[in-house]
Amino acid sequence: MKKVLSILTLSLLVTSAATLESCKRGEGDPFISLLSRKARITGHWKVTSGKGKDVIGNSVTNWTYDGTTQVYTGASTGSMTFTQEYTFEKDGTFKWVNSNPNSMVSEVDTYTGTWNFTAGIGDQKNKSQILLTILTYNDGVSSTTFTGSDAPTLLYDLYQLKNKEIIFKGTGTTVDNTGISTSEEFEWVLTR
Image (cartoon, rainbow, N blue to C red; front, side, top):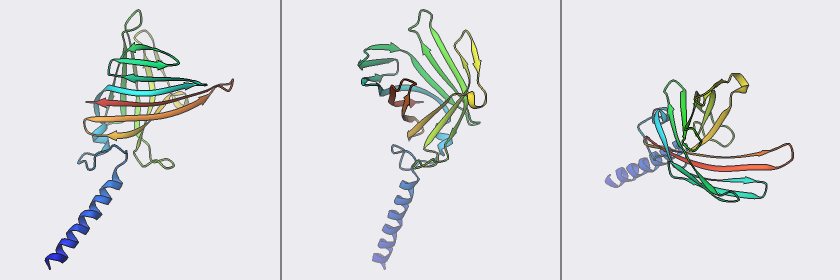
């Protein structure tokens, strides 16, 4: 009887583990979380690191970011100092602030709009991406409002969504009217 109970218990644990693992949306998500994805993303976040690659034609530039300084190597070299912070509200609104002390006058760019998880497109799992729709932009001097299809959008893959850390990843390619291809890969780490 003990052997049967042990086999049943082991079988239940294996089945539960497989079920819970399949509920993970991003590759880096926690094995189990008592908080919903919405509860985990809601709040104030600071971008603390990042890395990426920009390719324009045959020119490749790699970059890293340590929370205050982005360093470029490759086809372009140099550095730029800035900070980024996001606030995601439960009601589906967000605020994104870029502070850039590099310019002659310190500049703070503020974007506000709406956010939502995607519903699973193609091979993407439900809620494995976040879509930001920018409705206002303010650079401290002027403000711009966007409506309808004119509103810029950003789509991030949620590689990891933990209560205290998020990892956004993304890739994209554009081709201009002269046929020159521009592509980018990036990863941003946000912490509370």
